[in-house]
Amino acid sequence: MMNDIQTIILVGAFLKWQDEVLLMQRGKHRSLGPGLWAGIGGHIEQSEMASPLTACLREIEEETGISSTQIETLQLRYFTLLKHENALHSIYYFSGILKEKPTLHETSEGKLYWIKLKDGIDLDMAAFMKSFYLHWINNISDTSLHCFLDSDIHLLA
Image (cartoon, rainbow, N blue to C red; front, top):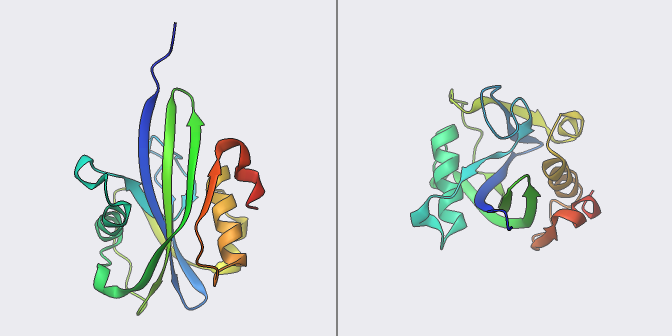
């Protein structure tokens, strides 16, 4: 008998200001990655399926108060498919540069922090997130898209 596989589509972004990145320590109450560090992001809504960029901009504004007009560039950098229990996670991850350093707002998702790029290496992140982050900070000027399957995610780091 076949098991049902749920598909979860997620977006996220690393937002950079000079030598800092905006990261979130996810709340302990979150179902995915409680207490772990991540960029800004969340689920793609049904109406956004054709545009992960639109979903990413919405998530950024919802979680940080940062609007699209405050972002100089936002480019898709990573796409991966991860199998987690009975779910297939499709993840679109962007990187962006902010025009100015905004004041951080409170969020129900977790706590927001400005972190020096190199200091983010030591934070506790999900394996795929750590791979994305390490690759990104070592290749910030690379704007190409990197696609990986669950079994290949370690190749990024």
